[in-house]
Image 1: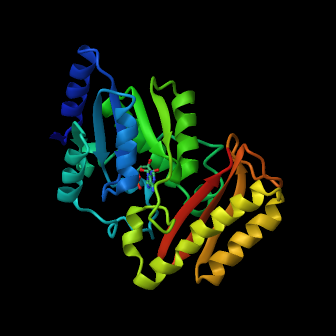
Image 2: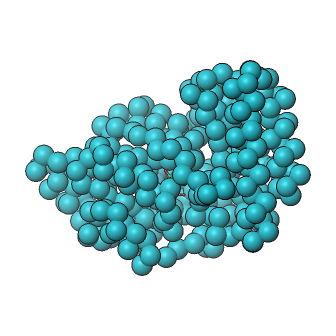
Length: 279
Ligand code: AMP
């Protein structure tokens, strides 16, 4: 497994792979890897020949009062996990390689990125679309795999790929969960023992909502209120819970198979997100 740190070296590697007729599968991450990330690697392997994982804690997607400096990092551990999973290249650029000090170009999506996390974290998605466009230009992937855990992010990036004609196949990987249902996240490391126990309320509430939907309850107001009650009763503080169309991200009043319910809630200082689809 190679570690590549410069954009030029990454592009040269990618061009060599393409000349040999092989396909590049790409999994962008912010590191501190867990089984959720590694499941995306497995998915990429089923679609491509050469697998690149990027590890880059992207400063432009963090707000001024967010956890950029505290974000967990452990490159040695990530490197071992990637090697063990058959990754070919870890692209691990320093911040200076990704952003010139006078960087002044941005990629921005203006429809799907406005509500949910886009409303709570202004400029977050502009940072995400910009860095992913830059990573795509460095890694030159044929296939890119992102997790459904960040469902809005996936839809925004899929729109970017469509609207800006990136020749890349987008794949959405399933959410990988801890044994009790909590969605795996690098940020779970921040949780105290007590908050870790309590945070399972998020996934339990979403699973319960899906059961009620399958039993015939489709009124968003009723279903979302129950999710909020379950999370706040467990000690969480809601950021949002919404039912939205999986195509337009617009809120829906009646749940259908073509929508999803997304939650963001704080346990202690830690903001966790999760969602459930109905298809
Ligand atoms: P992150 O390192 O948190 O930026 O995530 C990198 C990629 O891994 C994104 O596409 C995420 O959606 C995905 N991901 C994060 N957590 C999970 C999970 N529990 N299951 C599946 N994919 C995940």
